[in-house]
Image 1 (cartoon, rainbow, N blue to C red):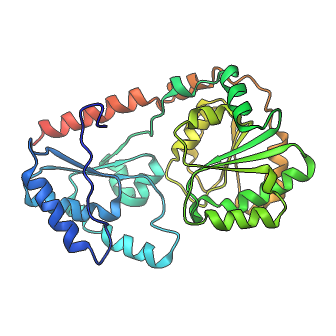
Image 2 (cartoon, rainbow, N blue to C red; image 1 turned 30 degrees about the horizontal axis):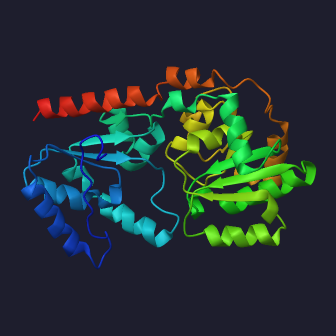
Image 3 (spheres, rainbow, N blue to C red; image 1 turned 45 degrees about the horizontal axis):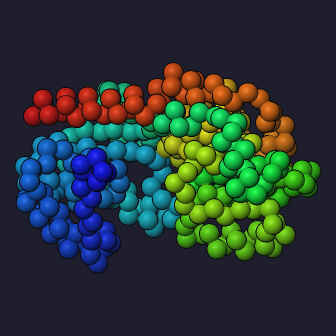
Length: 323
């Protein structure tokens, strides 16, 4: 962002005890900005009301809220809290955007969707970087020390939504029939230690690689043979689009929107079918299938980052014209 001429501003922690401090910081930010802001675009709906109250006070006319999910929280208490926090958006936001039809209907309602009040903006990916290249696959595998192993991959923070515990159960079943199988876990989070413990208890420590947060996800996707995403809920997960652009066979839970089906290399499975059934499906995928042209299907489906940038820019310009 800084290299491209932008600026990054850190605000106080958005918790209950610091709410007043956050509001004061927002007021000061919007009041003193030079040049002044024309648009406030918030991607965390539970925080959007605070931003929009301050923005409206300072005369910022364009206030966009963006929905990326289909559930308020894994925690019942937080779900109630977030539901309450999002109620004022009907009066404070001037425009709605969602990453998918399901994410739009969840936050903004079926009526707004039917009336065309919600812009659907696909999560774009850099398809040129994700295009499969055999030489990158070989180099990444050598760096990871996994040789010719059968590699399952997952990308996501360690929290209940991503369902890592079930993923480890799937891998445990895969290992019973595929002894050279390896699981790559990319990401970090509060539940990481619990998953480490489970991996140890199942005797899988030598076969599961915890890679943490990475900036080379495009290379790591090349190293995988199958991508598994057994999430409990999602809006439209970007990693699912990236995995398909890399030509990977993908297994997604049926709790994820069908809009994620971009290529013909993926399948939705019910979580209720159990880890053994998921493992059997993993072992049936054709990991040797040609992968180099899958990125074109992703481009044609409208998920290329260049197309997304163009749509968002056009949205901003239309909003400013209508002030």
